[in-house]
Image (cartoon, rainbow, N blue to C red; front, side, top):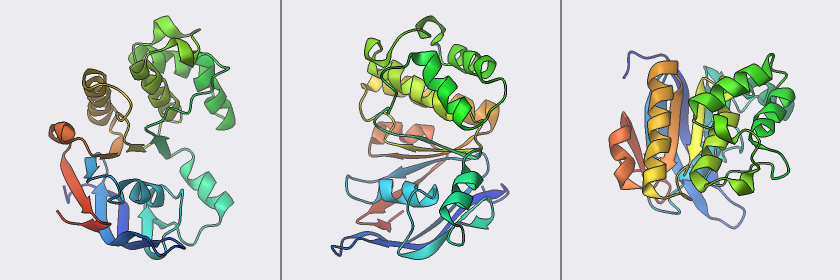
Length: 222
């Protein structure tokens, strides 16, 4: 998809931890606007590390990440946080919902933190899209795993991000719920133009992706 505007470029990324573990070894790849890209490989292959570097949650030992054409390495923490907060959203394997807040409140608090206008109207629209309108007043412990992950997706959508990074988003739910989550991702990709980079080790999810970056022992193998 070389005709698409490039929004992510990773150049020769290395991540070496203090104990000498080489999580990434010279990884390079790019992602165009509107792509739905899978990062696949076995546990320990560097998938999560790569997503953390791409989203600016961690810094590479060597190499560079360009996000929306800007290098992340030259940014301070505050500048980086401001740069990504309305452009990039994250969905993780663990839902990280606020247990004392209901479904609607879990979205509203993110909207308040990001100074988003008309947050409640937007949150209600998102929850309707996610088939959660009947769960607005429920607390996380009253929801199924799939419903909790949909709430987490709703929190990611509240900022209207251009890029969503999802790290094993179906790792804690069964296959049928996982398939529904990926159908939601595809709909958001195709209808809203959101670019997705999704890390997973589940080969059953391959048909959803436009293309796949395969990792093994911290290196791109395909």
